[in-house]
Length: 472
Image (cartoon, rainbow, N blue to C red; front, side, top):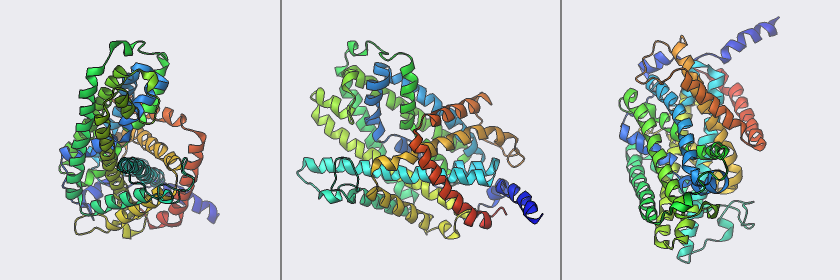
């Protein structure tokens, strides 16, 4: 009888919800509000436009959509805009750190919030690590151009394809630590550096478009859809991942001036800017070079070499490094704010909510930086990236359908959002369905890895978080 009674009492506790109204009124251990709408747009562009803009257009064109690659980016952008609208309503209603984790805590309950939060930790950690490994590869290529070569044992992790002698990626390890150190200086200082690099990155992209457009040949656009209309959908599934990261902007809610106004502007504007940049790059790329020649790891640089524009190719390589640096800064930032939120709610040890004099969650930043650096240094990139996409899509799906609960839950229905999703409830439902569909397209190995990661998270929750939660 005792066991049955305990079980009955235990189940509702798993779905206890965060007292959002109380948190908004008191905002204990709150972060400094220093970010503007412009800062959020720069942050969004910085994290979304990484090395993907220099890689995915060629792969999609050569394998899925041909010259119609621009349509795949537009379709992927529409899917993301649906999720962006949902994130915007949540962030303007609940301007607290934690992104989809905090949103889930308010409308679904603690156990769902923990699973979402734990999934997002994998996104931020492994996105930082994989970006650092790519950064390392580009940087070593630049060094090689000057005749400088690192010892092979320090070039990559053990098991990396193409370097059997590799044991430790020293460049990836160091760049993560540098980014972490910069974030420890506070958001004002790190945003200055991020802003400069984003402007340089956009300049490089526009330079590529401006130079290459003079080599566009109308015949390269024919046939426009060599793989048929179905290629657009298949290509969009690949293009979708080039837009991942805009959700990180919502993790900054608690550090934004006038978040109810600025959060929707930052999320939606950054996504629209990126959609335009991707469309421009893909349009001139397939116009200047036949799509069949673009199935390479560096299609933009490859196209420039075909066109004998080697001087631009070197600038593009620099732009790729700048792009990955801004991605690194923002995803580490997102991870630290998420762990800060979990700690403040009692689901992780309280030490992780300690703030420095600059208003930075000190131990959270150290933890994310050290773990991401270590993973980047000792694990091959193909294994690191397995957990990035599935965690992101889960967060997108939960947040999209969660807008319906946001408007009707007793816990949140009286809150006044500054932004409302248009075409409600069609937009949230369609966005949810699109995210679930893309999750079904992931490899079985990815699902197995995710199951293992989730199991570890549940062990931590039931051994610590459940007993120490603020909502008990």
